[in-house]
Length: 366
View 1 (cartoon, rainbow, N blue to C red):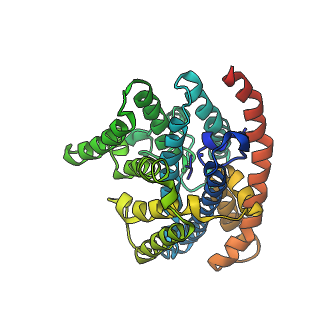
View 2 (view 1 turned 45 degrees about the horizontal axis):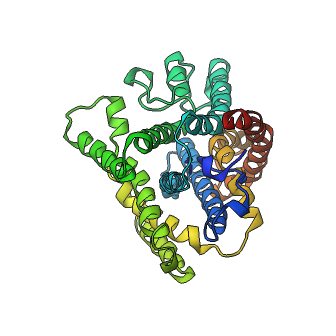
View 3 (view 1 turned 90 degrees about the horizontal axis):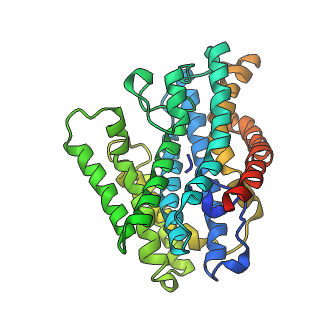
């Protein structure tokens, strides 16, 4: 969903990948922190998977998805993006074209590949898809990471989850601009600008699709991530013990549980963003043991995020009818599709993400 929250270099990804930074180059607290971030990515990605299992069944049966709040995985990705970009700035990464190229190569190739595949499917077998259409304007908007016009289906790109990548790419561009030309208070200026965008969206009557998209309060979740890193982890890391970390995780989970049946779209950053921020704040220090399988799921989480909806759709629209079933319990659908999602994610990670970063990462570094 993803989000940098999205080779591989854990610092340069929206959703997940293996680290290229050597452990020797990390501070004592940052090395385990990056492992914890991978675990958070895995958890966030699979929360979104759970949500889409229920949502796909709801489309077919007309029943409300019980686990709609699993979409909080997207909010976790956005908070992580703000956190990680602040870590990048804190480490002194040079703000030149390579900064933007690294993010583009990390996100775009797999996204473009899957967008093109969906465009072709929408041309030849449109009944297999819920929302993707073979609309050239939507394809162009998808390639440019821009929200479409009302005529092109609103802000939804061809690959539905691409709306989150539109936010990610815009955020990376803002980080580049503010860090390169923002002076001493550059990150404070970026946070203030995000607040300004949201306030602008509240006072403008009848904003168009593009303005409505970029002034949505959800952009404040990136600011939450910036705030977390600057105020807690950069200045007061010693105060965040494992006990405090798990208290933050449990508090976030409790707040989340209290809102699990809410409809948070208007002010999602409060209803789900605050719990997500608490989970991230605790999560980056709460995992003290290495969890190999969860780390691998974190490595594959970007592929999981882009792929899972279509595996679930295939299961609901093709496999269940082939078995003579009009529907199935959500848990059964999850158990049917989860191994396929994990396998597909691994194959995309090894077959697309890693080769792209190996080939183009070296040229970008020059």
